[in-house]
Amino acid sequence: MLSKGFATVGLLLVSNVFMTLAWYAHLKLQSAKLISNWPLYTVVLFSWAIALLEYSFMVPANRIGFEGNGGPFSLIQLKIIQEVITLTVFTLFSVIAFQQHLAWNHFAAFACLVAAVYFVFMK
Image (cartoon, rainbow, N blue to C red; front, side, top):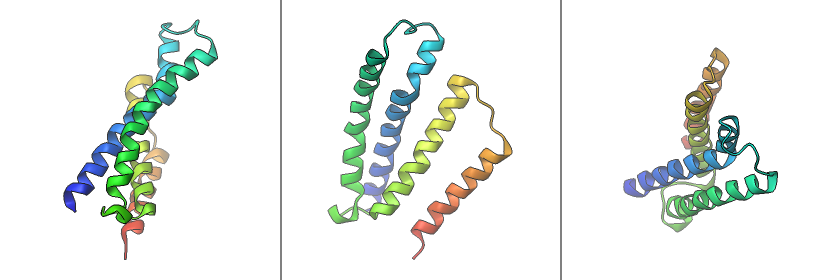
């Protein structure tokens, strides 16, 4: 059961890296003048191609991790884990790629997310 949990979290992590790239990498590429002349529909198709990779990891993660399929997590637990991973990956991406600065309120929000994980796993 522990290995299914680690596999689920690992797949969710990879999935969210691709999703963050699908949603936000075009902004960085545009600011770097690499795709500044692309029409919007091309940017959407580019993002969808990346999002297909995201789904290739997200769907197996949910199937492996869901307790209805023999995994260790309830549906709500899977969603909370996914949200925490999403915001962690996004935060790292925004700090590294866009030089965003974190303030006290960002850390307070992260603390609330950690509390959400704690509460969702409480019996």
